[in-house]
Image (cartoon, rainbow, N blue to C red; front, side):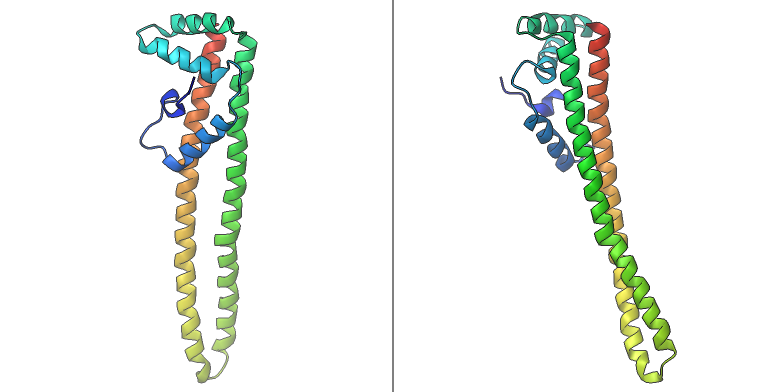
Amino acid sequence: MTINLKDLFAVSEDMNDKVLLKLLTAVKDGEQKEFDYLKFKQSYKSLCAMGMDEGTAAKSAFLTASTMGLTKEKLLLTVQHYKNILNKERDQFAQALKNQITNHIDAKTMDIKRLHDKIDENNRKIAQMQKEQAIMEAEIQKMHESAEASKTKIEITRDQFKSTFDRLFQEIEEDGQLYDRIL
């Protein structure tokens, strides 16, 4: 059975599509062959969609899944498996974000400092050096704007990732708690 992960989780319009696709692809790539959390959740959601209450739907889905070898312990282990996948994606994103900050902000900050030092040196030179100083000041302004633009973009991406990650992680966490409580 094919599982549409976008239908399986509570996806909203304010989630970043690119981040969501990346996280759901990681979950899909980590999908297990045997009956697991994703297949259980799909069955559970189908039963809820037919009007069953959560408890009855969970118990009915579990009863069916148990005929295929699923136990409560296996279900909760696979919930943890998918949480681990999301955590790994979060860690990779954090490293990529750190690299972006280093490459796009810290390097430009160092360049700005270097140019300020050069300007101070030029201020002590003769009038002929004033032209070179004006050119460097313009370059510094461009670097400030570029650094600010990079910082804003990185912060937006970070916030979108965190929001999307938190929602998916929370939903899986709540599912695990729900199933643990119900089953």
